[in-house]
Amino acid sequence: MAEKKKWSKGQKIAVIVSAVIAFLLAVAIIGGVAVLNWYCKPKEFNVISVAEVTSADVTLIAHRGFSAVAPENTAPAFEEAGLAGFGAAECDIYRTKDGVWVISHDINTYRMMDKSGFVESLTLEKLMSFNYDNGSNIENYPNLKVCTLDEYLEICAKYDMVPVIELKGKNNTEHYDEVVASVEKYGLTDKVVYISFHLVNLQKLRALSDATLYYLVHTIDEQSIEDALSLGGRCGIDFNGNKEANTKEIIQQCIDKGLLMGAWTIDSPEACNRMLDCGVSLITTNAIRP
Image (cartoon, rainbow, N blue to C red; front, top):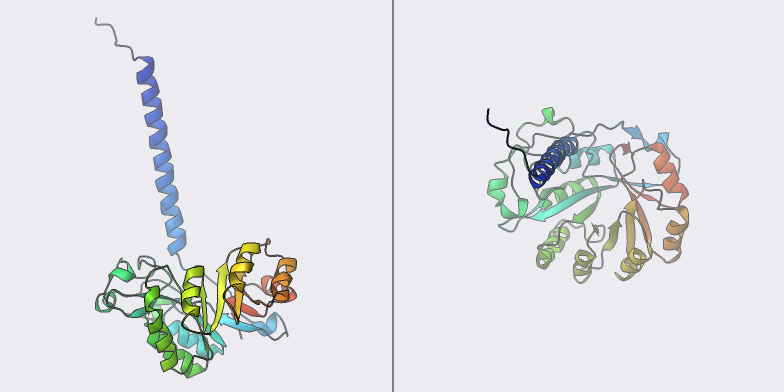
């Protein structure tokens, strides 16, 4: 009988390392799929009236439109915000390949639509061949298409809502004059608010307009305060109101320096009351209605 060939120490180590790598890859793939499914799953909200929360005078911004009752960032979501009496509606914008500004939170359509593509790489005609297949009460909106910036602004003007426009990504800043022109076309120049996580976007916009600008941050710190102040008049910070690091003390520090203060995304009475106690009067929400 032939003697069984023994593995060398190096071969054993190689097999063990390969097995560990394979295991880690499997865990990463399974974890990635789970996270992707969580991200794509429509969130369910318990809609409440602001009267159930507080008697204080607070400005409510409908986050991506009234996204608790209609698919986010769509014309129906903005219509529902207007019908509900929101004073403002927030949206996210990108520019298509052929130069049309459209509303979408994500740069890729995968999460919300039946086809996948990068918004900035698609023409409007191509994007219009996609249908929404995700979002609140999507079954009520067959063949729902992407909303253009012009459609959104028309709805804001119709319901006298303040347009709150998030400048997404860092591309197409040289075309912000088109956004400013569209806002002016609908008579909303004196009402519009622009927001962005990218300071450079707000700096580019400031060169074109004296509109109110909010610097979006997760956590307020000294640098973000200085960055917001650098934008000049009518500027502020819009921060994650659910983070405990954003304390009453640092919010007051911002207010004392003349910054406007907004908080996102506030969906519970507890979070809303905490923000009001901190002196914040601008609340972005999915689920608290006027």
